[in-house]
Length: 213
Image (cartoon, rainbow, N blue to C red; front, side, top):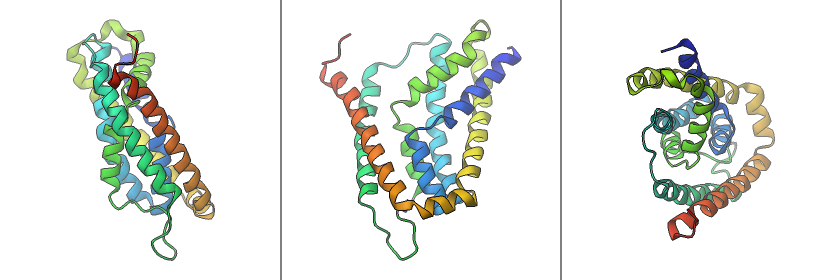
């Protein structure tokens, strides 16, 4: 196994987490509103999904058959409804107590776990990211290399999580978030409902048999 392959797997995992998306917006609200500890629990839960999707991406890259589209359509449907619920809750959020954050996630680990596992874009984004950074060394890829690549990817995921948690929990970020919390939460809610509509739009045709082969 070449050093470029190992380094490529690390960078792919790093960029996969750092690319902004629904999970980033959720982390912004949790980390800035409830602190680094809550943000860390969210990312710990999300890490499970990161590992699952990156594993499937690496397996696909080394030549295994990919999972059928029905599974991802079903995940897309579940994710769409889940994001819609979060978006609606954010748009209509009210603080539970004076001085408390507008949106409080009581179980950030569980929220992160659901986010990571049900993200229908997790697999294609992981596949695209890992392909771009490790496909150049495809000749050195085999199933015996998977454990090491997954281990290196895990290090990349954790490194990216630490970076995000450090940034989101910074004093300046938290002060800005608190000063504009209502606007940020409302706008995030609208974006989440947009993500939900997009997920449902792409998932429904496949489940109903309307998608062309």
